[in-house]
Each structure stands twice: as C-alpha cells, then as structure tokens.
Image 1 (cartoon, helix red, strand yellow):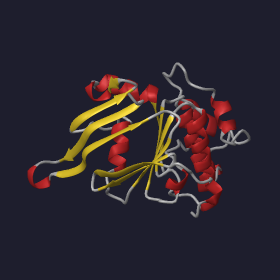
Image 2 (cartoon, rainbow, N blue to C red):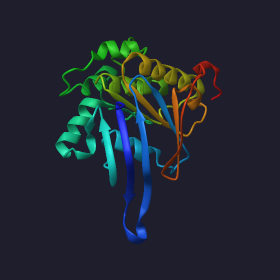
Image 3 (tube, rainbow, N blue to C red):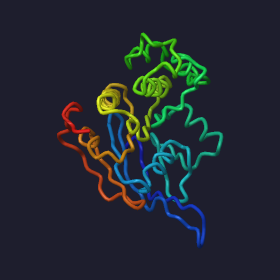
Image 4 (cartoon, helix red, strand yellow):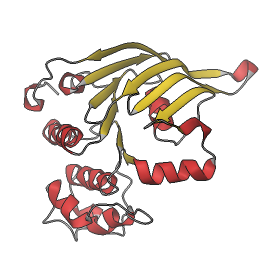
Length: 233
C-alpha cells in the first residue's frame, strides 16, 4: 500500500435543490519523497481535496488511508491529533501572527509536538537565519512565505500540503519557494502536495494530478521534471 490512499472519495455540500458535488469518486495514491502538483481551475475541487487529505474536512463517502490507517474512521479527537502530528499546512496568504517574531511564529507550531525540529535551525534552512527576531510587518512577502513554510516544517510532518503557495509572489520569489519545496520533498522523507492553477509549476513536479469538476481527469508521472529556473512564470 502507498503511504496515502484515497478510495472512491466524494464530497457533497447541501441537499436536494442546494446540492453541490465538490468531489466525485476520487481515487489516487501518493508516496513519500514525491512532489505532487494537483492542477485545475478555480472551483475544480482542488482545495476540498487538500482539506480532506489534511483532515480539515471529512468526505461524504469513500475511505482515506495514511500509512495503512483509515483516517475516515477517526473521531474528532483522533482527527485533531492526526492534523497536529502528521500534517503541515502552507497557505497562500501566510496567516502569521503579526505580534510575534519569525521565530515565535515558528515555535508556536511546536506546542504538543514531541518530535518537532529546532525552530532556529528550520528558519536557517529556509534562508532566514538573520531574520529570526523580525516581525511579519518587517519582512517581504517572500520572507513571510518562508516563515510559513518553516512553521509547517518545524512539526516534522509526514505530509506537507501547500495551497497556492506562490499565488501572491513575484516570479523570482515564487521560483525560490518552489525550489525549496522540491528539495524538501526529496530530502525530508515527506509527501509534498501543491495545489495550484499555475500549469508551469506542474513542469517541475514528480507527478501531476489534474482535477476538473470534482473528478480526477489525469494522473501522470513526470519522467523528466524541469529545473525550476527553466520554467516560465
């Protein structure tokens, strides 16, 4: 069995006249040390899929397994523990605490985590060793995003989920972030999933899953991923 397995996952909101099907009969698997891009237009179901993988939402039907354990059978307390211990989230708009420094923002994520990494070392790894005591308002957009990545990584997560992580960044900074995520997927023994509508990011991925109208329309291994510097933003 692969590290992550989704079997016949569907997600329906509302009922009868207001029924909206966000995901329909989704099946795929992911392994550790893979950089996977989930690609599709707005409203395709990408974020819903990401939220289910991250334990932020429950499917209406189907089964979801991580490391052989059925996440869809967890109660609320077990699901909270799963999110805390297994999942790292990187959001498009950072969600940093404005009144905390970079290292305080990252350290906050280590609460109740037994096997977390050293916050200072993680910030150094993302190139912010000289910005530890800066507040978010004194950091550039790219630096804030790297703090948010460090905050996710410090938990030492088995699964790193990134929702449009470069959507608010310029091309130079965006490429730097993708290069960092690609390196992490291969070096940190994690499954890294990036949800995006930017087709160029898919060119550097190990696998590309395309979603449309709540369904997976293709799932392809990229035999020759491009270098990040070679893609057009």
